[in-house]
Each structure stands twice: as structure tokens, then as C-alpha cells.
Image: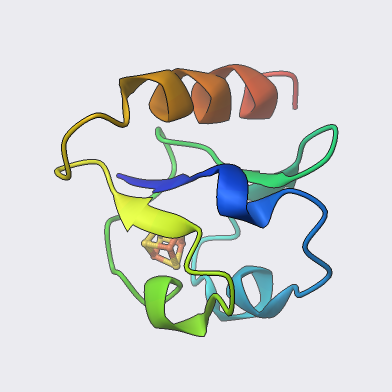
Amino acid sequence: TYVVTDACIKCKYMDCVEVCPVDCFYEGENMLVINPNECIDCGVCEPECPAEAILPDTEGGLEKWLELNSTMSANW
Ligand code: SF4
């Protein structure tokens, strides 16, 4: 799955939401998050993010963000 990280906080761009083929972006308190159960790992959103806030979870050290994305998107 892809994960939204802290660079997204208060970002006003929604380009990632528009390109996602499965609509798995959700609005968290002050940032967007990706539902890891719905993300199909297509990677289309990553280059669309002007803040470079979206990263694949295969990059190390993102456990905290993955958990946050999971929790914040689970309420829907
Ligand atoms: Fe959506 Fe693809 Fe980005 Fe996953 S990697 S959030 S499916 S655009």
C-alpha cells in the first residue's frame, strides 16, 4: 500500500484524490490518508503529490504513518 505522511498536513492540493482509480483517499483531521485495505498499489498518486507526502510502505520507517492512515480511514 501507499501511505500519506506528514508533508500532507494542511496541504490544499487534492490531485492525488482525483487520480486514484479506487477512491481510497479519505480526509483525516488535518491531512488526507489512504485506506491500506483499498489501495491497489498502482502508484499513480505518488508523482501527483506536490508535497511528496505519498510514499510506498516498502520504504522503511513508515510504520507509524501506516497505522495512522489505517486508523483515520477506518471510520468510514
Ligand atoms: Fe490510489 Fe493507486 Fe495511490 Fe493506492 S497507489 S492510493 S490505489 S492512486
